[in-house]
Image 1 (cartoon, rainbow over the protein chains, first blue to last red):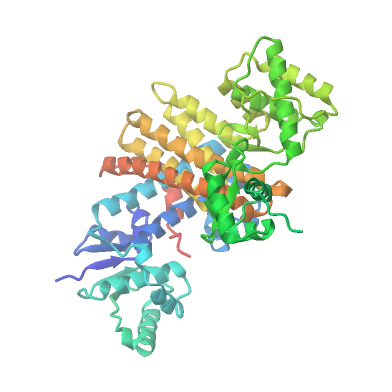
Image 2 (image 1 turned 90 degrees about the vertical axis):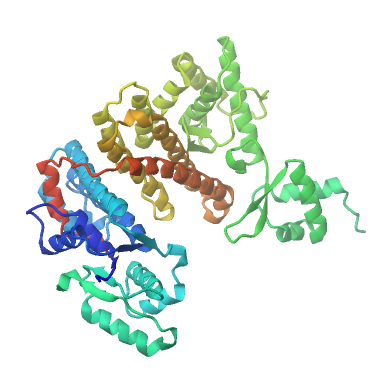
Length: 214
Length: 345
């Protein structure tokens, strides 16, 4: 029997970004994985919260690009709302649209967000079988233990939710497209770290399925 | 010789020490030089008399706040400011009466703001704030009150001139028109967009293109503040939900729900604007103190906005189906670029 899938936020984001014949490999893989659903899809509330945070971040990127289109001297690098890591995508968007009429661009960006959000919401409504571990039930000490190895707090909460849910369940897959924190080597290292330092707690790790490395 | 204070004296002392800032029983006890149980007992009396109220501070301590009843959120003003406000309100009401008119609340408040913001009035120190309908005096303008001249204004003649000109230009206008013109005069884009949105929703058939143009702009103009992330967050989600709902159903079918949600969100935004405009004034720059007055109203408004939004979002989710949505080539191009971004940190 196919194992159930505990999905990471990036898999769903990639799925929502899919366009026929235009998508890059990882987007195609995530789309295929979700479209050809073989097992139960499990989502934790930390992932749902992350999805909505990402939507807000996308709006902020659009707003900052619009400011730049409106005023060429506006410096994206000095924006207090745009983290440095979002600069490349903001610049790419700006360069592709700097000649577009501002009002038209506002509507285009808003439409793009509509489509993106609708895809995510359709997924949540139609494809998800179980929503688990409310954010307030995530164990702080477990998050803190994961944080010894993984820096990203949202990822720590997602993995903590997966470990908590895995505890008394059959082994499921942790499906991700994260090339950094959840790459196979890092995941193995994390498991070893827990075996060595938290053996008493007897955490059972889900099986990693990283679509980036498939 | 120590003279025992009467109950009334102790109550007066309590009210006096609460005049400028809310305090805990322990802090009041030290200032009034009495014991804890006496202070606690008189605070209960004063609460029943409606002169003080209990609030909870950020660290969950029990704090008492003086109830003035004549300022927004009972934010304290000085005695001199109170006299100046009353005098100004009295002059305005008198000028309206000279043309056989009685000002309504909006007319009184907006005329007062006009005077305060005119440099020649010499009243620029009187605190004004932005709230639900735009700029207003911090002291509540109530036309039913019998305000008297309690202060001799240095520039009374100039003040009267400003009032006369304002009345001449505005006495025939409806409150909403006066508010709209004020938003334009002070160039507050967010308030102007809220006016435009509400005006558009009064039509039987909604002009979707125009409405989305206003809502897109509203979202862009909405303040992004790290301290109050939810102000932008809920605004952005409201705008996107209205837009998305339009793919699946006619927006006019959900007129009431959309307007109620907007109203709740606007109340939250306006309370935040109140906080923002008052916190830039030196006297109110202590955010801990300001939170005692506005923390609870902000929390309540936020909760109401979230609840109203949640209802609207449920409607949208119930309409969401698998229909194929047309995507323009321009939007496809944006989506191609965005493939490189998963938004994760």
